[in-house]
Image 1 (cartoon, rainbow, N blue to C red):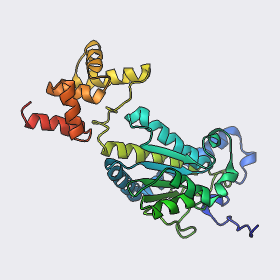
Image 2 (image 1 turned 180 degrees about the vertical axis):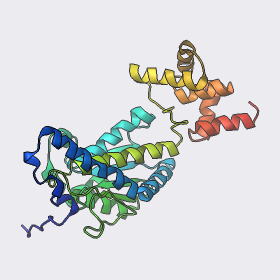
Image 3 (image 1 turned 120 degrees about the vertical axis):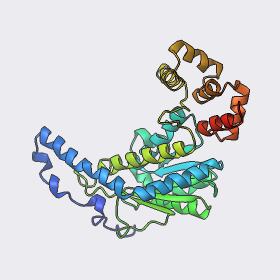
Image 4 (image 1 turned 30 degrees about the vertical axis):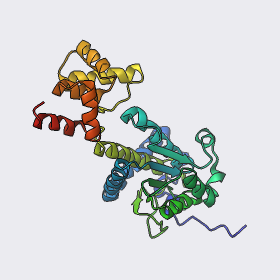
Length: 307
């Protein structure tokens, strides 16, 4: 085995001066310490705002042209990517293949730690090849310490295939350089529990992924105002949310909202378009397709054509 390089200099591995007596703190002191340290996540997101915005723009452009978004990670980073990908279909009614999470070790690694699998550079490259990634796609590699071979392998393979490569890491570029089209650095400082990157690094990664995926879906017209008009009506909670969106935006009572929802085939966006413009389901479908699902544009086109 080649000499194991020390990673002690990495920001994510450094010792946090504020928590050196962690094992001597009361529970309340422990909570307060975490709370103070977690404030760093907000500053880290603010410092990466331009890179996050560029990621949203480039990803929305790719998805508009039929591309896909892949999150790649190992351990906590991998789980967070899978989580964000899994939440897109119910929230935005996207097909499951549009946003995908890839974790070292596959589905089994979601519930049982398989940290040894992150060391295989070639497995990351293989995961990208297996999904037939092309220049239409976007690959986001998530590695808190910036060195995970699985993720670096995936990013390298993605770039070779012409995909947009985006890296998310919690160490500064001068400590670890990563070849990527957009280089997001979320610098939250040393962890309360030294090296435990499921803590601040994990929290700030969750924040970044929330911003990226929601921002992309807003750009794709899956949101009207701040309402999830593309919500998938698949359970009682989501049906209730759909009805409330219709009641509120269309200014109708709950019974009428229920009727409108059924008439549209349980499609909130289509229901609103039908209600506001008087078009039938078929014409509404055609208009939305013509405007790539953007409700505001579809409504405006109706008004300008005097529907």
